[in-house]
Image (cartoon, rainbow, N blue to C red; front, side):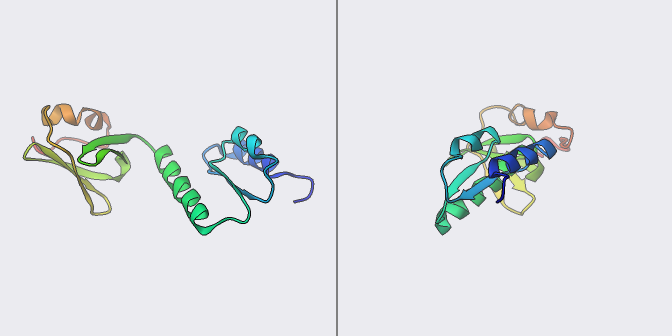
Length: 137
């Protein structure tokens, strides 16, 4: 690049839209600390290995998903899993476990719930995109 640095370009991008995800790929580590000021998600040095590049892209896509809207935490056997509310189609109460049906057709099953179904879904039901149509849905 001529007189403009990648950091200058990052600052211009931030002025236009603060939601964009920035990944720097460069041969110099001179501006690595400056990349934090433009909220870059990665600063990769050339030569970039394929696994580093794809990990950076995966992180960028995950980061973008988090910024899209509210998240709903689900306690599963493998730990706490947060999903975007926009990806939830409906939630079913089956044998005191939540089956969270996702828009992509997958189902995430919670561990045994100790609270009532309504209490468990409290945060989700506060979102105007969801309503309870039955005591179990």
